[in-house]
Picture 1: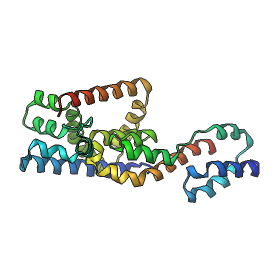
Picture 2: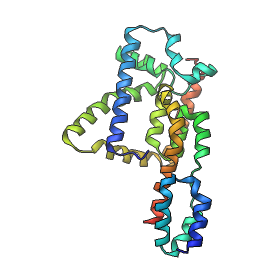
Picture 3: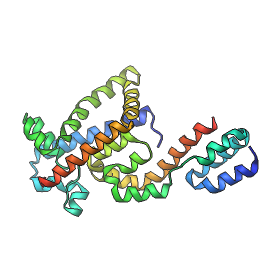
Picture 4: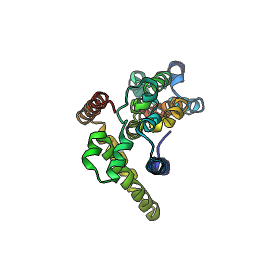
Amino acid sequence: MDSKKVDMFIMSNGKFFEIHQINTIKDRLNEVDDSKWAMLSTAQFKDPTTTLIVSLLVGSFGIDRFMIGDTGLGIGKLLTCGGMGLWTIIDWFMIQKATREANMKQIQQFLY
Amino acid sequence: MTLDRNKLYSVLFIACLAGYVWLYFSVTKNITEKKLVEVCIIKHATNIPCPSCGSTRSVISLTKGDFIGALKFNPIGYLVAIIMLIAPIWIIADTIKGTKTLFNFYIKTETYLKRPKIAITLILLVIINWIWNITKEI
């Protein structure tokens, strides 16, 4: 893919991924052909900040986990009152990383 | 956190273990109802019960054989009790055999529950249960 497009993609979507993953994504984007660009530019990634806000407000019901696609863990959180409150607090710190990893999983579908 | 077999099993196992410890603690110490609900942050902070408030009391009623009482406290207690009974046995069996049947079952259930029709029905059920929880002031 055109390196200009790759740079543009990284600039506008870099915040959705872990820093150590950016280089992998960049290398991979340079290799794939232009036909993937249309799909990539319309892909919707979850914003880690939004999930953090959701986690702070309604984390006890597991909504944050449902949002990033971890339905099973979400149900676990919902049934146990947010893991007796403990899991809710742990997730305030974990959810941003989990969101970025969910985004990475999503972009891998386009890249490979 | 990308969930793989070992991670899922340890999370589930720890959750079940914590559940059993909590159950033992609540049964033996004979904690009064008022103290039992205090473990829930939402109930503690806002005085409004959350959708799963009362499931401890429900599971305790189940262990005493009071099935109707358990249903009255919170129907979610049945679900919790079933998971707590089955999950540890399944995990141990899987670990001994070295298979991952529970993990495959978990992934299958997850994709099944994501289907809009089922998801909406379940969300509605949880909301109805929540409203019932609030009206009976559990």
